[in-house]
Length: 111
Image (cartoon, rainbow, N blue to C red; front, side):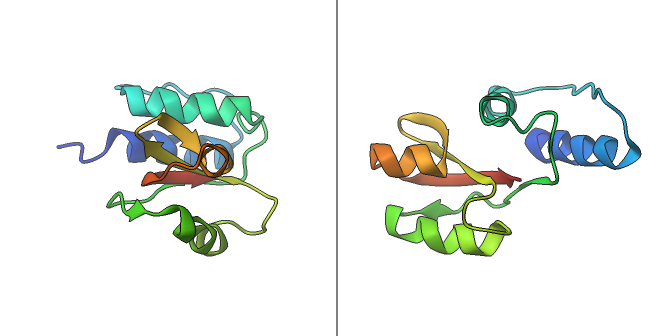
């Protein structure tokens, strides 16, 4: 079986383990993007207290002006959750991208 997206497989295994009540998940293989995504989740405190995480495929280009539209589409509330973007300044959440005034491709979300 061919893996189409390592990041998508990782997020699905995290969601499945969370539903089953497991506390640990082994993710293999792991790409640099997957590690950065998980680092952002950890910095925001969502590793132990996660409701849902997902990947957006294909990775759409979004402008700074379109970030709010994606936030209302993907997240359950304005101040709840994060959208992860890959930009020229690195992988970051939508709040950091807005502060740094950069845009890029959307990777996924978590809340």
